[in-house]
Length: 505
Image (cartoon, rainbow, N blue to C red):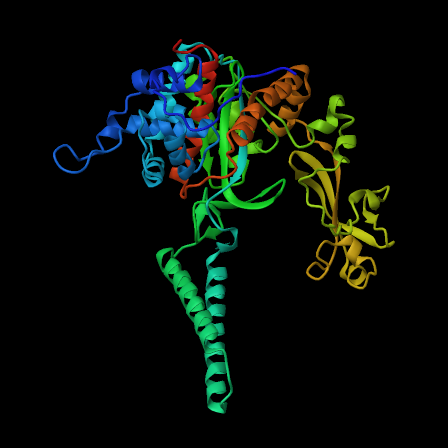
């Protein structure tokens, strides 16, 4: 029988040379070289006022290295990063055997502010100096992540007032019932009722205080938004796994080495609003030959017009581009596969309403006939919808109101009296929209290559941040702080690219 030396995994008291723990070519080696030689932290150091009085503070360079190293290891919590500084040799070596409290780490990240953008820009310049930015294709996309906020605390002012009124009415009802029980000599759970009353009073008072501090409805980009009493700059947004209260992290990624050119976090789920700010931010890195590519959430007629007028070579796919591309002909077979994360609860399907194809247009185009056999009469014979010529018809109340097929014909039969239907007659000459022009670009051979390149450029970045770095949610509150945290995570990705390409070796 072979004999082997027995390994000893017990506690050892051995000398450690911290300089030898940071191996060339590793992330921590590139990080230490960047912070020590390339990034100027004078503005962060100027925040401290303990030259002659006060206790010594942890250097911003040390805290920055600790935070970025923790993010690179998938440690998002400040408590986990603080624990690693006490237990992990690499963290000890990078921090110089510093062991800051988790509150110090959390406060540093929360108060970083605009310095995160400046540090991100400095590292981006180094990536450019290293030849990692090709400027041939910038892929733009976003990821929706939960915020450090409660979805249940979202609503408008009317919702909050109604909630506070309901709590106060409940308190009055409990007090009245308790008083009546005392009068009748009945035995009641006074302690439990008192706790409930105090809890409801406190919650109602918090709502009233919040309403006084925010007298107006929340608005952004000229649109009304739902407020949130936990983080009023976050937004309720729909995702593939349900509705979340969170932020959208947008990234523009260069195709050459997957360097993140720009990173922004916004409290909205509407990607159309986020395209032009990103295009403006990456303007210093673009050349006349740089192409931009984004997925189906970003194009709108206004966005496409702005890109065309600026002379930007852009490829923004629409929602139906897959149905026009033969490469996606078999995608229906994949949709039928079970998803372990999908909600398995039964979904009640709504009844499909009659479509224009279910109506019969008369030969003289004076009317059309609905599935119930009633006539709909013309109320617009020369209309235009998005550049398309159309004819509109509307039913008569004497036919639609008593019709037995109202539930199948109208989306809201309790509100809508009559059905209206439009028949499209084709594109009007000389009125081609920017959306139609973009569809032609996407359907071309070049457009198909660009769409494929977009997948290979930006999606691996999100996969790295969400899975490898475990960025499943933002831990801070307020758009400025969340934007800084998003930039720090994208900064970690860029430093990894620098390390992999031999930086500082």
